[in-house]
Amino acid sequence: MPQIPDEALDELRTKIDIVDLVGRYVTLRRSGRNYKGLCPFHDEKTPSFNVNPSLRGFKCFGCGEGGDAIAFVMRLEGLDFVDAVRKLADLYGVRLPEDRGQRGSGASDKRRALALLDRAAAFYERMLWEEDFGNAARAYLERRGVSEATARAFRLGYAPAPSEAGWSPLAAHLAQAGLDLDLAKRLGLVVDKESGRGAYDRFRGRLVFPVVAPGGDVVAFSGRVLPVHVRPDDDRPPPKYVNSPESFVYRKGDHLYGLDTARKALRGRGRAVLVEGNFDVVRLHEVGIEEALAPLGTALTPQQAQRIARLTDRVVVCFDGDEAGRKATLSAIRTALEADLDVRVVLLPDGTDPADADPQWLRRRIEEAPAGLDWWMEDLAERAGTSPDARARALDAIVPVLCKLPRASARTLYAERASSIFGVPLADLRRLAKTHLAANSRRHPAPRHLPPSTRTGRVPPSTAVQPQRTPLPSPQLALVRLLLEAPHLANRADDLGASLLADDPLLGPVVRRIVEAARHGEPVDVAVLDACPPDERDRLERALYDGIDAGTDDPETALRDILAACEEARLERTLRDLETAARKARLQQDGERLRQILSARIATARRYDEVRSQRANGTWSPATTRHPSTSRLGP
Image (cartoon, rainbow, N blue to C red; front, side, top):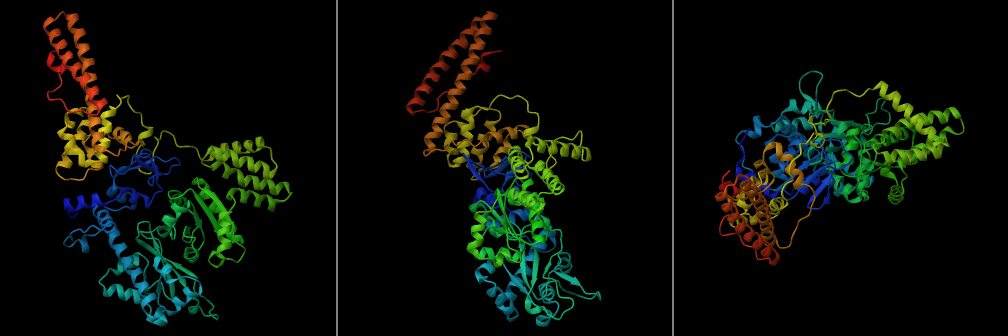
C-alpha cells in the first residue's frame, strides 16, 4: 500500500467538516454539542448515531461503529484507506503527492472501475453537447422540456447509433486511451462480438442517464432509445430502456436514480417523491420538484427504502395509474412502511407520466397526498364492495402488513382505521392479527442461541452487560470537552497544571494526549481517544457524545473555572482520604503518623477554602506547592 505523508493526512483531517461529510449521507439533527441521525451502518428506528464536530468523529451506540471521517468513508463506500483518503482529498481540495506507479497496476479494482465509468460518462456527455451526433438528443430534451442546465446537472449524455459512428465508438475511445477493455466488459459498457474478435458498445442510439452513487461516483448507466432510431415497420423494435448489468460496483437494488442530486432537497423539504422512470426524475427536477427519485428498473427494495429513510422520514409514491402502476404502488407502500417511512400516495391518471403532468397540479397533489396505507385499504374496500368473500380476502391481505409496521403506535392507529373502513370490530381484527403472527412464527421460528447482532456481526455495546463503574469526574470530563472544542488552549491549560489536575485514570491520559498533540501542531480529533484503554473507550465515547452543550463565549475564563473545579474536587478527595487515614492512625495509636496527617489536613483545608473563594471571585490560579498526598504519610 502506498504511503501518504503525515503532513498531507493532517491537512486533510483539518479541512474536513465531519458534519458536512456525514450530512451528505445521513439526515443529522443538532442535539446539544453533537448531531444525531439514523445509523447508515445498521437498520434502526431510533437514532443512535452521533457526530461530534469537536472530535471530528462519529459513533453509533447501536452497532458500535465509530471513527474519523476517513473511517466513515471507508466503511460506507467499501474503500480501502488510500482510496478513501483520495476521495476526501478531491472533495475538500487537498492535493496529495502522486504515488509512483500507483495509478496503474497498484490501484484497487474498484477505483479503476469507477475511473473507467467516469471516463465513459464524460465520453457520452461530449457526444451530446459537442458533436453533431447529439443534435437529435438535444432536440428531444428540448421538446420534453429539459434545459441544458438540468441535463448537465444529471450528467446526461448520448450514445451514438451505429448509423452515426459505427458499433463501437466508446470501445474505440477506451482502447485509444489505453484503458482496460476487459474491465469495461465486466462493467457492461461493451459486449464481445459473436465472432470473438473485438467488442461493440452496449448503448447505441440512446440518451444516456448515468447512475450516480451518493458521493458522486458513476456506478452504472441507463439508456433510453431516441424515437428517431425506432422504425415504425420494425418487427422487433429496440427496448425503450437498456440498463447496465449488475457488477462488483453496482447492485441495482441498492441504488436510486437521482439520489446524489436530490440529497439536499430531501433534507430541506423533508420528503422524497418516488417516480418510476429516470426521465420522470429529470423532468421533475426541471420544474422544481427536486426531491424526485426512481428505483432502477425494480420494485422498491428494502435497501432502497433504507437509503431514503436515512435522509428523510416521508416518501410520496407517484406512479402511473394503470394496473401495473397500482401493483407497483402497493409494493412500494409495503416496503416503505417496513422501513418506518411515512408513505403518501399520488396515483396519476392512466396513461399520464409525471414528466408530462402539469407541474402546478402535480405539486398540489404531492402536498395533499393521502397516507399510503389509508389509500390502499380504501381501494381494497371499494373493489371488494359488499361481497363477504372479497372483503375477507382484502382483510387477509391487510393484516400481515399491519403486523409488520415497526411502531406499536402505528399498528394501533392503522388497526383502528381498518376497523372503520371494513366495519369489523377492533377486537376481531386483533384476533386475526394474533392468528397471523402465531402461524407465521410456526413457519419461521426465531433462531435460538444467537446473540444480538448487526450487519457488522458485533454485539451492540448497548446490549452488552456493562460492569458497574465509578462515574467519570464531571470537572475533568468538562476539561476534555473544552480542549476538544478549543484545542488552541491546550498549551495554556498545561501551563496551569491541567496534566496534573486531570488525574482520573481514564481522562488524564486523554488530556495529556491533547496537550501533546497541540504542542506538536498535530490535529486534535477522535484519535486522542486512543490514549484510553480499549475496554474503556466505549464508556468515554458515550460521555463525550451525550449531547450536553457546554459551549462558552469566553473559553479562557471557562478553562480557569474548570481547572479550579478539578482542583476543588481533588482537594475534597484528599480531605476524605486524610480523614480515613486519621481514624486508622488513632485505632493503631500511632501518634507520630497522626500528627503528620493532621498537619497535612490543615494545609489541604486551607488550600480548599482558598480555591473555593477564588472560584467564586473568578480569580483562581494554580497552587505554588503540590497538594499533600496520603501515600506519603505511610501505610
